[in-house]
Image (tube, rainbow, N blue to C red; front, side, top):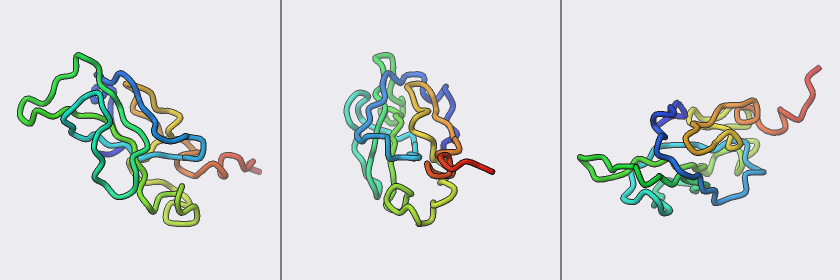
Length: 127
């Protein structure tokens, strides 16, 4: 799923757990994953690494058809800017990328100049 999450997708989020320090991350990818549990670290089956995830409150209900909870997961792929600063995302960012500093429970996260262009672009004064 893209970064175009809405607050209604996240109404049962209670907490966001970060597995890494966010200081060096201009962006993280976010997606809604289906998991068996609402309040433990979810499994991760993508390339790259999980950098955070959401815990759900006690009112969250699993999908009646699958029995799974929809939870937000934050991740980075091997070709993302943090690993390859001069690579594909030297400028720009993937569609599902948001600035991790804008993420909070029940808040979708936002694209910012930092997430789209990198920390150096924000730190460089414009003429």
